[in-house]
Length: 218
Image (cartoon, rainbow, N blue to C red):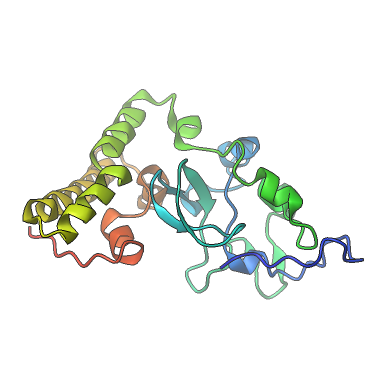
């Protein structure tokens, strides 16, 4: 979905609290929002990472793009595409006074501010976990072995009939799942943190966003 903006010269110049933008999904976080996470105003379990090279829909400019930078977003409600903090019964934001910068910048009657800022100074995993050496080493190893640039190359080889590419993709999927299990077991990490730490499960992303049908052989 893309945000629908009204004419910039509309007479209306204030938020009507209609909840429309919130119903299109959670916002991306920026560096200015790090305190919201560290103070758990936004619980890390309500966040997920879109990794570099992942295929996503650009909600501001429209269309599908391969990301050239990490994006950390607030997750949607399990029952809808709406931001997890939208109170449907009130059409109100549960953290409105502490809402992220992107929510402040979004003016549905004027798209200029959000268009100018939505890719600037995005928050990334390095800012959140870079000082935890043991964890950051795991995240870097995962990114090295499961990066989307390499995956896209393997997908092209697979489409050209290269059976070894299929095996490599399967190995990536197995590794991605294994490292998540290890972090839960060895580091006593809550499962709700995994999508922030490693992005969405690789098998799920390949199925939903790359259209691959892969059966991993155990």
